[in-house]
Amino acid sequence: MSNSKATLLAMIPVAVFIFLVVGLLQCNFITVDAGAFQKEKEYTKEELLLFADFAFPNDRIRKYDEDIRVVIKNKEYLNDASIHEVDSIIAILAPLVHPIKIYRVEKKGNLVVTRNKQTSGKYRRSSGCENSNLFETLSWSNTYSEIYDTHHYNGAKHIFKEFEHALGLDEPTKQYPFYTNINSNTPQKPYIFRSFEESDSCTAQFYISEQEKMVIKMLYSPAIKSGLRKEEFMKQFKLS
Image (cartoon, rainbow, N blue to C red; front, side):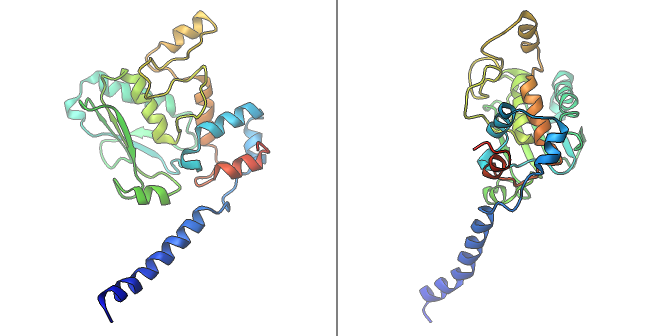
């Protein structure tokens, strides 16, 4: 048998495997307990649509299903203020991701934070295998994230947004008055202030809107499962 034929035969099992995996990814067998979800809070149609716009990167739910252990990779090179900023963000997010716990550890973390890099801020996450887009695509729950923060780009406001992405939030497709795109050069604050109190709270170091808090709580509801497709969510709540 020629080498070319042998190669083609060897590729058949791989092709079949890929075909089966792609087929599984298109299935909607993971659903949402709409009744239990609405018992937590009677969400309005507008709130459900807001969740659908923020919480489905690549049209599927990806979130942590285990405790989130945050480790600061280059802690020895940071000042106390930079470390306290991370701890403050963890404290703010803790009640939002309940019943999942989020806390800082010294090693063996599944959310790794690197700060004070001179490159532009960026976010990268993988599941099971670092830098593996294949594993990231095939995995439904998030088991490992890395945040890279330049610390000179909007300070704590930027790293806060990166934490939100690590938890499973995406950049929305629509423009909202309470949210600014993380890649924007403008400050992370609403475009429109309805009161002086809102303006003061928004310009605080660790600003997070009430809408973003709600979306994170919705995402980490036990009724919302990793792998849930946006199409199925919209169908269950009659949004489409």
